[in-house]
Image (cartoon, rainbow, N blue to C red; front, top):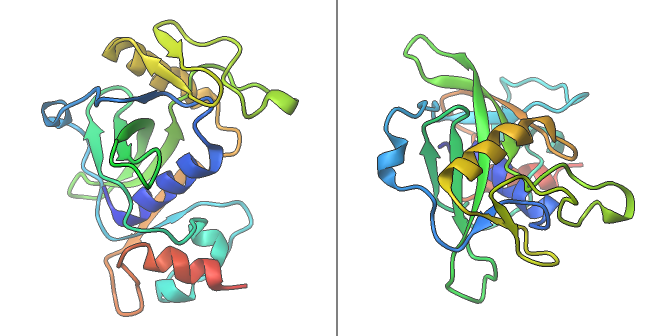
Length: 210
């Protein structure tokens, strides 16, 4: 998974919080589950945001904030790309930066376009949620109708899958629940001078621009 897509997904996870997200204390997938997963082309990517029009040929450090709506943060967490329909991203990150315990979160994606070598160069990505998101004052709470096979973990704790099948079912259903997410991203080019490819450097530079 390339840096820009990692940044975008991590920001989405942090921004939406874990209240209605599928999480687990241990990984649901192993490297063996990655066999046959789509290969996403590495390089410079951007999120597709309505009204965010600019010259993509410019160095990444000159892009506007809307092109990479991610906050400055340390290196994005490790991810495992899992084969399936849809493919799933397993993200490991500390639930509390002061503690070493890992928490696993999940997103799914659909390849939109491929290059001549068969690598994915455009994707639709979404977070795996517990059920239909609540609205109004309950918008930050877990779904009132969790999907089968998902166990609520209390206020603010999201839900845990009882099986891989339940997780895959939630991944497929969650494609319909995109509120607050920026699902589309596409590959722009291989890195060139001015493209900041260090630990979230490009996102930090973009966030600093007016």
